[in-house]
Amino acid sequence: MKNKKIIIGSRGSKLALIYAERAKVELLKKSEIESIDIKSITTKGDTIINERVSEYGGKGLFCKKIELELLNNNIDIAVHALKDMPAEETEGLVTNCFLERNDPREVLISKENKLLKDLAPGSIVGTSSFRREFQIKKIREDLDCKLIRGNVDTRIKKLNDNLYDAIILSSAGINSLGLDQKISQIFSTAEIIPSAGQGVIAIQCRKNDKDLIESLKKVNHQNTSNCIKAERNVLKILEGDCETAVGAFANIDGNKINLEAELFSHDGKKRFHLKSFGEVDKAYELGIEMGKNLKKVSNNLYKK
Image (cartoon, rainbow, N blue to C red):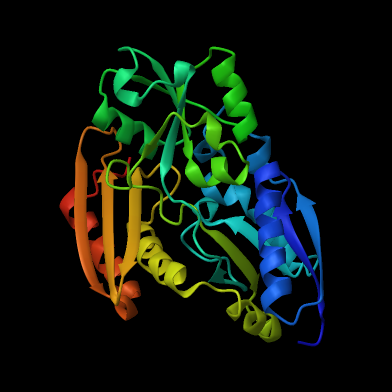
């Protein structure tokens, strides 16, 4: 690699900067890159406090400004939480590098450390997506799910301020911030199927930066990458956005890959659930096939 010093672009939240630092450590350890700076970038998604991001353009709000910095050569790579990235790649950029997956599961943090089953009927549960809302309603129809926005610390403060009785968050974020002691319940991926790519740190670069693409291959975690191919293709086929209530999760067992997904109608009243498996080297095709099957069985009821 000609340039052994690079700049990482990242969102400025505490969690995003932890992820950027993790990418930096991996690159310094496994590639020939010798020096890395991290540039903090405030995205439009970071400024939306109390409303759904779908009302302002969806998932891309957390990525667009960082991607623009990348396209304008102000940074060399971008580090994202993969679940915040749109299914379609931005022209001129490529995301082919994924660090080993963190815990993909969802967790409950509640007042008095109650389990979901022990919450009183009508308890207010804070969720940041339709997927989580419908998945919680599937388990406890008598709970009142309400939108919650903001970073992890902000959401926990809202819980402590009695605005909510419980909140649903990703285990990966809670663990990375060292807040494990606040967890009241961890849901298995069978109980709540996570968002495609949940728990995965993705590294993006310019499509024409051949040297950097080669360097990133050295830190790419192959099993994680294969799971992502399957999960993200489900999203891509469904043309999923922030309002699409869909979960997709893949895991690898030997040379086999298992894929499970669930899709809800736009009003949350109908659930479409599929499981499939195949050879690991067919992960890409497996995701496409499941996306097509979900689209067919749902009869497009997931779209408004």
